[in-house]
Structures are given as structure tokens and as C-alpha cells.
Length: 240
Image (tube, rainbow, N blue to C red):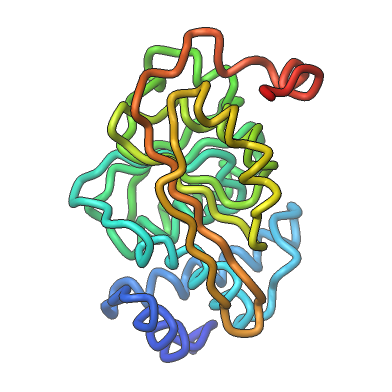
């Protein structure tokens, strides 16, 4: 069967961000792209279905976080609001040594993820839960070295969703599609209240996909027990 994506394009662009992909990883990304497009005809997963765009805007975009922070071998990572698996599944393909949890509130999407993982012969913890509920559970709260989220909400609310999962000394990696300076300013109080502090912000251009910003938020103290709150309360009474 012919390749669905350009593996040479993926390898070249991943290399630019310091991510080396072997043949096994490239094969798995090809399976991922093919199944993503197939499933997208049955359930709305992504507006991006052209192979080269999938390579840049989904795969390489997800892998850029490896250029921003060192993630040690065997680290526990939770991808909050994983959707179609970005960045979590892409991270797992590049680094099968990672202990990755893929969490989403939509089970239909997680069923797709399960099928894709099975076809790639990869394993992850796939969890159907709302982040604000899981963040109050001892099974998930402060259990992870890293939490990731890719542009699913504003940074203030996202921090309330994600920081409770992170161990003290761990990092929340927020991936944004714009410079996000305004979001950062708006979120500073909440991040501090939740036990975090912004360590670094990296902004760069991703080929024809525009600007990207990765925000690294370090967890320096435990999140107070009242957080995360139900999303309706976050909207009604944001941490200011």
C-alpha cells in the first residue's frame, strides 16, 4: 500500500525541532493520518484532512513541545481534552517510552483513539472524564509529571483544568496558536492561586501554519482543594 502522507516531509520538519523519527514511528504516523481521515467521514474530528496539512498542522505542531522542554524517559503525561489525539498520540508515537493518559469528555472521539492505538500497536491510558471531575479524584490529582493541552480554552480556565493533575515540581505545557500575551496577563493570578508560575514562553512560526506559542507553567505548590471547580463556576466567577 502506498504511503498516505509524505514521510520525508514529516521527518524533515520533525528534525527541525530536534525530534528524530525512526521508520517505525513514520509508519505509525502514516497509519494515524489514514485512519484519522477515514474516521473523520463518520465523526467530526478535524477540518484538516489534506495529507501535507495533517503532517504540519497536526503532527509537527504536536511534536514542537519536545523542543521546548526535556521530558525524561518514562515520564507520566496527561493530555487534557485530547480530541483526535493531539498532542498526546503524536507524543506517544515519537516517544513510546512515555506513560501517557489521553483524557476527553467525548467518548466517540476516544473510541476513535482506541481504534487508532490498536492499529498502531501502541498503548495509552484512555480516560472518558470531564477534566474538572477527574481533577478532584485521587486517581488523577497531582499524579503526573506533565499535563498538556492544545488550544482548547483560554489560559486562565485551562490552568484550572490542568494544574490540579500536575505533581509539585512538574509542568503544565499549554500549546497556543497565537502569541497569547493577553491570555498570559489575564491568567497570572489564577496560575499563582493554583500553585503554578510561568517559567517560559516560546513563540515561533510553523511553516505556513502561522505563529505558535508554547507556555511552560511550573507547579511549585499543591493546588488548593476547591480547584478545579465546575466549568459553570469558572465562567461565572473566574479567578481574578
